[in-house]
View (tube, rainbow, N blue to C red):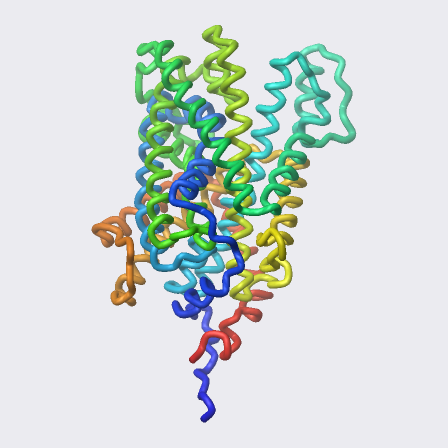
Length: 503
């Protein structure tokens, strides 16, 4: 007897059946090698990096002052609400794809697509930002050893011209470079790409080693720096509000919130744990544990480092490019600068590794659903069992952009995409609890209506407090994503084929 197929749902709100996720898990070609603590290490590897070593200076100097610790608390709380919701989803749907996959099964295709599209800002552009920061710390390390590389090999063309003009204004004979490239940023991305193509086990082992190094260095900063804290630098703890010509309020409560929106970039990465569910040994239990554990550990370290940093150096005297290293240099602890700089280089390397890893797994999930070309983004290497074509493509894009583009403001754009994704996940997990109460939930978010509501409000509030030009750029990015969805993804979705998901 011939099975009668259900009519094809052409709505942009159509949802991927939960049974299809179970099929994806069974058909996955990825190696399941990640343990509970391996996943937690990946989360810490993604989180600790640019936030501690770069953004602390900008956020404290320009926006929050010593109250930067409160900014980290505020951003951490917003992340915690999202993390608890992520954990429940990860226990139900242990598949690669993170927030994209979770939304596809609950809210609908168009929302899932937009989240997947915005996660490009989080992972790919985040990795690009970190690559440039890595280059800056690498240059600082070379200077420590008396090596002074040429300006045109350490900066993108625009930044190189700006630096050359500043040096000429100071009386130095520096040419106006016709060509410049951030070579260290380009090369480190290629190295990370090679590691990722070789396999998840190799990537995880590399990350574990780096995580041990940088967590040790962060603890070193907290303990040693505490001996050089001057409590007078914490006064006033919340500086009086100051309004600039653009009516942007610095300091005060508004400045704390704006700083929280900026340092939110420092938390990007804990959700990368959920993108590795397809390679976890026991994803239903270990992924929720790793998400929450990595977030708690990193939040505590961030708060302590921010207090030590603003206690060592008055907030309005902090260095904007390498605040932690410079704080120790100002105290005459030159030997400590070597340790901190090397730890920063290692830390930023692991952030790149996990961000690029997460990006390729999200692309893999979207390609399996037909929303991206399958032969490119879902092609698994026969030996390494990794999405090698996608990994190489992501690596080349990140390397090229990092080498040629000044991206000092990209971290805020990364945050905008992540904040929207987090708010959506908080709503989606609540919606699924109402629609599918019978589903097995190895982990259940406590007091879900309260947690989900606070998560939505907190993340949207931080998003609202981003700078105006960041919000405009984000709207343009979302508009481009909608165009791509209607031009390609909607027509190629697996949901258009009744033999795929209908029964």
